[in-house]
Image (cartoon, rainbow, N blue to C red; front, side):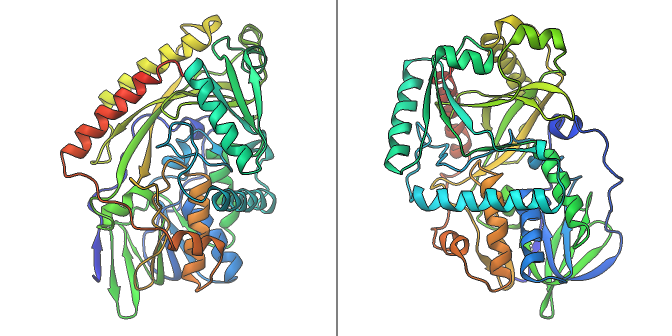
Length: 445
């Protein structure tokens, strides 16, 4: 094909709280004319900005344009929980152990973390936004503890260290009496995702043009180049990188193969000194559930936006890429109940922010990082691991676009295509039934 038209543009529900607590941003630069570039990147999240940074390393002086449909950190990049995880974290499994070459993926994830660490240093990003604190898989019952034990055994087989925490240690860490155990692993970096993305965009501004509120509505071949069209202008470039995760499908790629999933989260108001004393525990920690369908909790103290707790739970498959206000309202009620259950000393505290975040998964847990058409490259389908996997696929797509080969390009280009989904509407109905059942099964986790 030589012409691709976007069938959908991003839709967001709720406030991107990580961005909101940082305060206002500089006025966005909107593309309002026709320009040329060497590379144009569609998407300004973890994948897109990582691709731009990698391009500046590989081809210093190249003309790079990044097109972000909204403002930086307002989309999925500012709506995740900020866990940049180095270890296997397969959301389709019972205990996160992957089905593929976990050793290779761990090594790649650590490349992504080091790449991000370099960006923090080079672009003078607030180090509070990049906290190498590790994380804990929290267990609320016997089944969850069993998941932690099998995961610990899997990590041990890979030569990776972990530490099992008992109920008292979990209470001392979190202030919550809810957990019977926890499995601590040291390699995860806890991001303030919006702060990191804003800093990445700011640092790249010296080397690339980052346009916000500039959705790509389509692209077509013009001679040997590609022209990307936006509402008020266009970019003509030799090479395109699609870094728009599930919206890869919006341009007609991988149709019928991608699961458009939404997770939901909420954030407390800033905790004052009296509330913090009542809560107890450490001021910073992150707990992922031992069962992937359980509830993620995180306490933050990043210096900007105050001391707060984030709750994330509930999932819905939405092929139309809009989770709907009704699903957000339901998730908000569930999250309030989960929060009260974990922190009875703070029960009834009303959340300040609630939101939905868009994920894209494939049935066989593969990404799409390859050349899709001549000089059109993809850094998409992060399988719920947008911080590390997005960074990796962005780096790899930039390398492919520069005819470079690396461990990253070899790993992802060797992956199979995403498996086909069952036909609609069975895929949506069946998947949401399964998600609700798994949510019920993991109700205490």
